[in-house]
Image 1 (tube, rainbow, N blue to C red):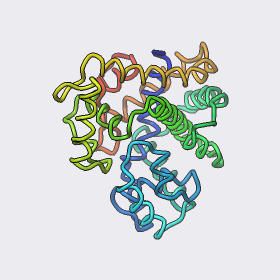
Image 2: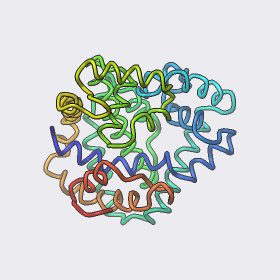
Image 3: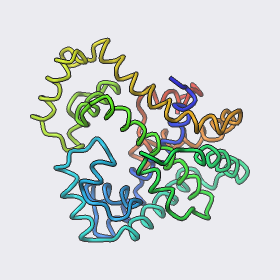
Image 4: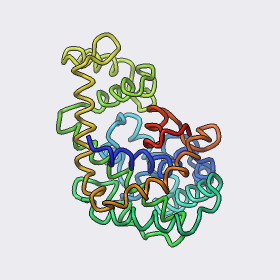
Length: 291
């Protein structure tokens, strides 16, 4: 386990992923004919890859059932274009962050951008499609847009790395999704259902996980918990070059990001912020201050 990479992930996550809960972004998608989840989510997040098919989006996102992705992507691309969605996503994200954070201190945001860029300049693109897709886009000129883009890139780089670790271990998408529920201590087969998995598919996966010794009843075994933690630690290892490149300035970066991430988590989903959880985002990346 490399705590540096987890702290950085935990602080960049609410900033980069606020776009998925931002009413400003959802309003923009609705103007393009994409209301609700489905095509708005899959196509807006996947648009950095061009105009990917549903199966390509399924592969890149990792944990979704093709049954929900393919139809949503086909519907999305029948109504709008990647260029329009990328603009809608960017405008929604930056408007939401300004609503939640105000206008960040120029010196602080400039320094955060500098350090995040330093880390991401060494990030490996091979095997990291969503990260590479974002990197291929024109870099924003607005500082809030730059901060959001870099946090989104870091988030997707770690996500791409995580998919590499669990697919190498021959874990199935529905299995890793159910493991996430066990890890987050939320009711089994609830969050996973939003990823398109049927009750029959989830029940079959749980039976298989019990046979492998990962689950007993509806809880992790010690072996299963250790296995899931190993996957996370291997993901940490793939992100070490980013933390190493930031180096001794990492504490400065986390101290800048922490109050912004905390403010977004404090607002929560109801306020168009970001949900808490996983011990309040690991006690806001070890600041140990309640968000």
